[in-house]
Structure formats: C-alpha cells, structure tokens
Image (cartoon, rainbow, N blue to C red; front, side):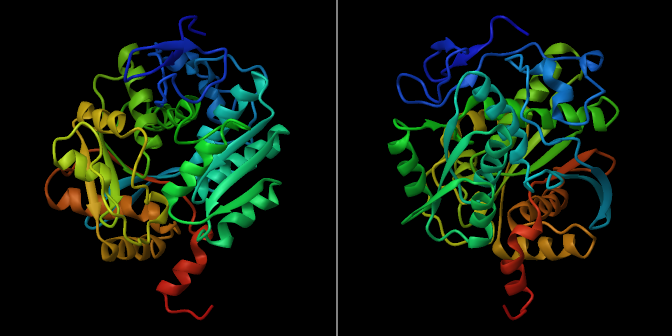
Length: 379
C-alpha cells in the first residue's frame, strides 16, 4: 500500500495521519485522501468476486474486510430511444443500492482502526447500507432520518439492528442533528467520510474492467451529495495517472429540477453549489439542498469535460416507467439518469457510436409504495 496516503483538507492543503480515524478537518471541512497511484489489470485479485478484487487500490491494507459480496454488478447494453446505452445495475448489492460500496470499505477500515459504534444520517439508502454493514461487522449503528422518511426505508435499518431516530424538519435538519451528536459517537457519514469515497471509486475500476479495460466516453450519474461523481473522478483519475486509460470519461451529474443546487452552481460558473429552496420531488434520495462537497463535485465535472442535467418531475416519471417496461425496476431517484440520457442525446452531447454508461443506483422495491401511487393502484 502507498506509505504516503493521508487525509487531505482540500480547502487548506492540511494533511492528517490516515491511521487516526477522523471525519473532518480541524477547520470543520470535509476531507479527501491524498492522490494514490492507482493499479493496473495485473493487480486485480480475480479470485475475489466483489469490489475487494481492487483492494490494492485502497489507501489502507485491510486484513479482514467487512464484505457481503458487494460490487461486480451487471452492466447490460440495452436500447434507449433509438440508440443504445450500457446500464450499470448497482441495485444488485446486498442492501439494494450503490452505497454498499462505500459502506463496505468505510466500515472495514474504521473497524480495523478500533471504531465499534457509528452514527449516520440518511434519507434512506445510505442509512440502510451503514446499518447492513455495521450488522455484518458486529458494530453498533445509530441512524438519524427525517421524520417524513417512508417506513419502507427505515424498516430495513431497524431489521439490521440499527437504532433509528426520527428528526423533525428537512433533510438538512437531520444532517445538522448528526453533526451535533458526533461528539458522543463516531460520525461515519456517507457524505463526510473520505473512506466512503474510496469505496465508491471502485465503480470506476469495475466499469473499466467491464468494458475490456477501457474507459467509457460518458458516465451519467444520479446526484444528491455526489459520492458517485467523486468516486468515479477519483477512480478514473487513478487509472489515468497509472497509464491504464488515455483520458477521463465525461461525468454528468443529474439532479431533480425541484432540488438542483449543483446544477445551479455549474450553470452559473460558480465554484460551489448555488443555494436553492427544495420542493417535493420523486427523486427524494437526491433532495440535498446543501451538498457538503459541492466544490469538489463541480471541479470533478469540469475536469472530466462533463456537466450537469436538471430533470423535471414528468421526465423522471416517464423514464421510471420506460425503464420498468424494459425490465429494469428502479427507484425514481436513479430513473433521473435515464431521463438525462434522453436529454443529452437530444442536444448532441452524446453522439451515436459513443460508449455511454447510465448508473442505476437503487432498486425499485424500496420505492414500491410510491410507484404504486404513480400507477394509480390502491394502497
């Protein structure tokens, strides 16, 4: 493992030893991990059928990973609106969403470093992933969720043994409550924890391997706080640094028009997100009005030559149903990515013959009550 890996505060340049668990800098900002050299195909542990096949790319050597077989999800080429795209089925994960990648790596490292209880805040999938992997690790987990969160999502957390606390108010109120409790239990937030991004970066390595050790031209990703955008940026940048790919793929962050602070920032040419007043949206998993890593997300998008797309509620619903009727039953939040594929193709940003990956991040099973409403079915 690279001996120089450390926590990095991108705002100040300060570094901290990676051996000591922490979730933010001394000035209160989110941390990254210093640049790593990446791996080539000879360093993939092909005996492992999980994201841990890429363990050599991680900043910490983990002797006993907390793994349930996460990663190695299907990549299927399917027709879409007269063309084709590759759909990455990230819901083929133990808890039903892409967040298992981050939870597996984050909790493996934290447990190895002596953490036995963790705090998380979430509107659904992040909390389910942390609860699931904490259970697998023998760790205690406390999950804060907005009081309005569907019981269909909190049941999964409770079933895994997590303590669930309902917080009145907005999603941001829940995040603020978690920060306030972080002095009494280690804050293993999927939005704040640098090691979570080391898990999501394995998506880049996996797409590279899926596509015959080549990078796609475009990757379209549903985006709330941006952990998949940053994971892909980190992973593909490592592959570029290693000489395994000749260029970065263009990354596109997709947000609901009802809550699109990163899109507003990108369109304004700003360095950070532009504050918005969120409105109710089908894509509730992406309804994050104040993403803590906004600067890093926007920088990653610009570095890749990609951008942002804001999609309407009508476009989300149409894409959701079109995906379902092609055999892909997803939650509304990730249906945004397919809606963005339509938009990007129509305006010529994606051209015929290019390789495009649409990341489908969560299963529709978690959103079945909401989808039933859209179908006009009685509860």
